[in-house]
Image (cartoon, chains in turn brown, cyan):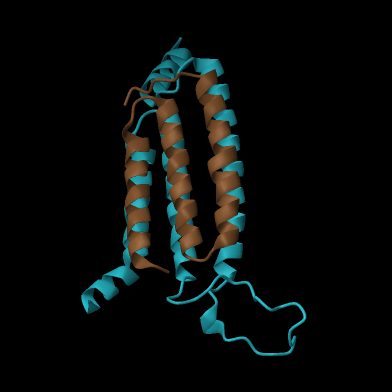
Length: 81
Length: 134
């Protein structure tokens, strides 16, 4: 566990999470959630949890994003807040 | 450097609390239902981050025995050299269950949008009130 790398990845994931919550375009929000998921995946590789990391990359960043994108395209794209 | 080391040990705890508060704010403070789901995902991943960081050790390697095949099978391994794999396995289940929950919730959102034509919470409550009132 390298604490400086840990710090950088945590800051990047918090920035991605805040942006995903605050942005009004829902497609941008979903893509930022995928980026957040990617940074969590890197964080778990850094902590030595490689099995969690590749499950996260496949399922968290892949399948969840596809589900969200399908839903956003079938419903409204712009959020009110 | 002692203070720095102490803070570095709690970095993941601080990060998980911050991420959890962001997710909680999105679930309660935002009115769009997709935003609420995004917040729920962030919340789930913050809890997974907490449990996985319980297993991390300083100076430990990934939990794979390098000379496992063909080596001395009865030899005792030093547990301090490997991170604890038990929280990883538990959190694998949590990730898959989280994706299943997200899929069911998105299917419900599609049905809500088909029936009411909106995903904003206040408009949805307004339409529910008028449809029951008339």
